[in-house]
Image (cartoon, rainbow, N blue to C red; front, side, top):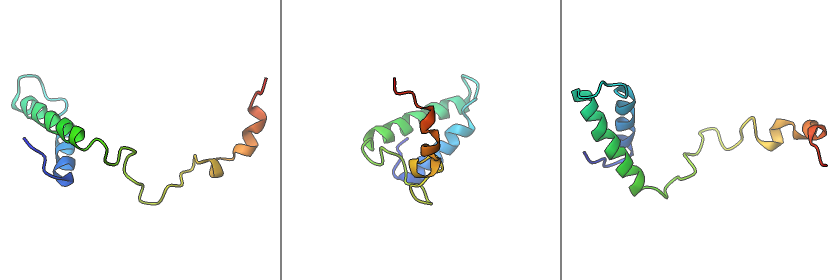
Length: 81
């Protein structure tokens, strides 16, 4: 199996997840092995692309970001011994 584009990669990942608990020796287990090999090959071939992960749809700000997390309120908990 050869994954040609991101859509095929996503479909392979979804299918692999769906059959991930297939009993050994079944057709699904053999299909899972082929899918995993194809996914790994794609990952290796595209290693540098989006290595930080996909950009979030809503932007980069997260509730745990420094400006939002309320760090100044937590400064008293820091021990600077």
